[in-house]
Image 1 (cartoon, rainbow, N blue to C red):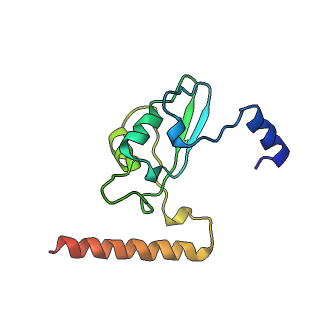
Image 2: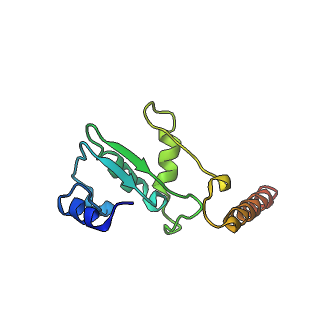
Image 3: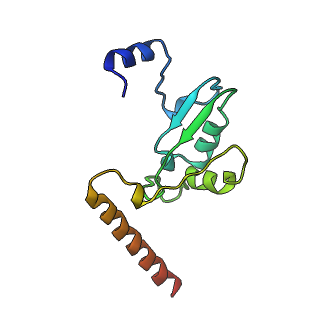
Length: 129
């Protein structure tokens, strides 16, 4: 969305910075617009650490898809936990998208619907045991 030369300039002047989550510890992000993408793969502690970096005059956007968690089986998604415990805090918005919001190939909506239907059938089978 930004021409390559402008992006290079903004990154050189640190107006735009891309940093791994691991490098957030100890920082306070004042006067910033912060995006954490793929947050479904952050642990509880990682997401809490990220959220507590938000400084004065900053806004944070956190995105993730709870159907695509790549954490080891013994680790919970911090995004799921955060969505549950922070949902009713004033000043924090929560938006959940579904297959109707897909802007990819038309078949992606059908694929998501099929997987959701299978997940519901599987949950019903598990409940009947």
